[in-house]
Amino acid sequence: MFADLKSHFDSIKDRRINDTLDGDRARDFAAQTGDLRLDFAKTQIDGAALDQLIALLEKADVAGRREAMFTGAPINDTEGRAVLHTALRNLDGDAVMVDGVDVMHDVLATLDRMEVFAEAVRDGSYQGQGGAITDVVNIGIGGSDLGPKMGTLALAPYHDGPRCHFVSNVDPADIAQTLQGLDPATTLVIVASKTFTTIETMTNARTAKAWMGETVKDTGAQFAALSTAADKTADFGIAPSRVFGFEDWVGGRYSMWGPIGLSLMIAIGPDAFRAFLRGGQAMDRHFRAAPWRENMPALLALVGIWHNQVCDYATRAVLPYDNNLSCLPAYLQQLEMESNGKGVSLDGAPLPYNSGPVVWGEPGTNGQHAFYQLIHQGTRVIPCEFLVAARGHHDDLHHQHQLLVANCLAQSEALMKGRTLDEARAKVADKFDGAELERQAAHRVFPGNRPSITLTYPQLTPEMLGMLIALYEHRVFVEGVVLGVNSYDQWGVELGKELATSLQPVVEGTKAATDKDGSTAALVGFLQSYGL
Ligand code: F6P
Image (cartoon, rainbow, N blue to C red; front, side):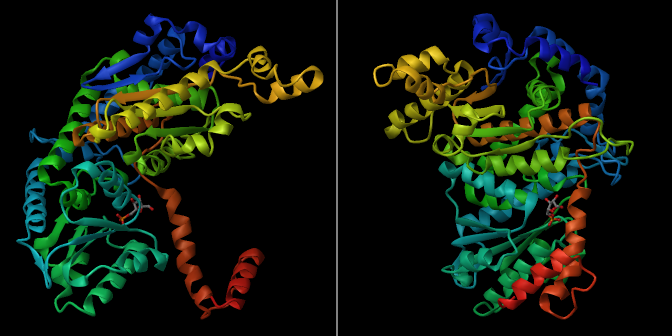
């Protein structure tokens, strides 16, 4: 499928991006919607490549699949489910039909209930045994943790509600260290689990209940649940008035827009949460209406396909020059890798090309002092994706923000321009000569011509965060459709879960490791000899 694009890349790959970068290219290889701008001019994609990439969208019928998603068709066809996280931010309530039923009534009613509860927690009218809630602990994992955690960190300047904590790992260190120092009598525990069966979450939830039970008489009254499984939340002892349900057409990694976002709503308030939803809705409208050449999610997806499937760059680095987005790379790891890390296409045949890329990253400028060395001079090419705002939230420190922006722009410029051997020689000619000059200069050469894209926006507001997250969701959708995979199931997480269950009696010592392979048995033996 990518053969023509690959041969086109081969024919242009030595062309210096820098030599092509006039004002027209900066205009033509960019897109803007609202106040969010995507620049992909610092890549090798040229007009011919873009034409061929857009042809992939037509061939895969991305437009048809997009309509199928927005209108509730069961496009998650290994689980027989619609994919309708977009309904959670459909604030105008236009009908969205699933199996002949308009789901918007329930979606908006749940949003209203969340808002009433969040306000009550924030204004102190909902109380714990010891008075107004001072701390909220969200217990969840994967999509039931990363979204609200990432969002709460991202929107820290808007955080005017109780303190929020996030517990995800079954490692007791996570819950023990989080609960340490909290007052159970003024803590609200939110158990966030779509299925209400995830072993890590349910184990932590029981630990939290026992901790609270040492002080609080009616523990259930200080618990809330976010789940599709009303029967299981009732069994856990949480009253229906504090259970916020959603449907199975909300995938875990797409769920922060609905009940799973409750901790974020409590942190920033219902108005700011609605602004976040409005941002997502604005991106939905853009994605549905904009022609491909102006369509930001589609263009971002095509950049991804170009780098991963065409150029064979196996990873992409997400580098927010926005410290409050420190959790964005982890959030995108789940969103992108759980969605498009698939080995077979929709019909079950092995994928004849690479699945989605490895996604990783850290905020700048920190990463510059850690792994950027490899990005600049290592032998592998790593496409970089920068994010940067015009303004931070600390006007009195704007000069520091300007330094941050200068660093961000300098990195993409350095990646593109590099430094030639002649330039490197000139840098050290006053210190060395002869063979030593050549040796020293060689270490200071930057190959350059390394691709990057940059997303720019005025400020990281709730609305802008909504636009950004919806942008990435739709990017994943488009990449998945072009690759022909199901972006909405996650069978690859099942085997490890099953084996963990079968290993539990082995590590507890109630069952011998005889049916385990030699390596696993030896690992268990070593750990048991040290007190496992
Ligand atoms: O590990 C797989 C997974 O199902 C994720 O997709 C999901 O976000 C996470 O586990 C948590 O699931 P739940 O919300 O059902 O506890």
